[in-house]
Image: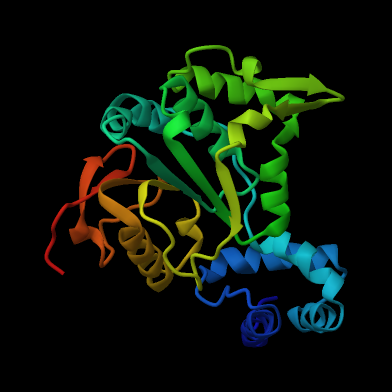
Amino acid sequence: MHTDSDDIELRLLIEAIYHKYHYDFRNYAMASVKRRLIKACENFSCRSYSMLQDLVMHDEDVFPELLSYLTVQVSEMFRDPSYFLSLRKNVVPHLKTYPSLKVWVAGCSAGEELYSLAILFREEGLEERTMFYATDINQDALKKAQAGVYKLDRMPLFSQNYQKSGGKHSLSEYYTAAYGNAKFDKSLTKRTVFSDHSLVTDSVFGEMNLISCRNVLIYFNRDLQDRAFSLFKDSLAPRGFLGLGSKETLRFSESHKAFDEFDRKERIYQKKTRYAG
């Protein structure tokens, strides 16, 4: 049964994580955090958030595993293929006018979106002039992204998405299959910088031509979403592009005046050259 004490214990646990490990989940959507921490309590055999707090405060080896519950690592290659098709057909022609490009995959999880973009940029002749920046707050996720290894049974869905997104070859050309896994070609990430970066606490880096941050902000509350949008606005070059997830929108944020809706349906925005505010 849910009680007020549960809410207090939950807040104290999140506060304790912030002060001890410097990961800030205080402005995440609480309903989502609660669901994840209930699962964590079950995993660690803790009857309450207080018991979980005691465990994570006194055993630092527990925290990396707890972090995997708090950070969502569910993705797929070319997820929402129509988004990638729009990038290919509508955004790429703009990007081709630049001699060099910077692309930020924010909240890259285990790298599915990064590899999707790297393949798309290779097929569109943009790879050699592009630097990719793949960031996440979860170090384990970043390691998985760098490795580029996924279960082979995920490939049929990935391949289907790839074809629907306008893929020009067969996805199997980009990976080697062995021992039940698919390992993507290392050359796809030869121009990628992997980095620990938090949209909650960290600041702007570089001047990007494209930022893709999809299905991350749905876990933030409004204030935190506004902070992230402001960070993206300040990190984008004029006329740079921002891609969001299908359930995310700039429309109600304080930063919306700085952007044009480039493709409303696919949640792709373009930063204005000049804007008031």
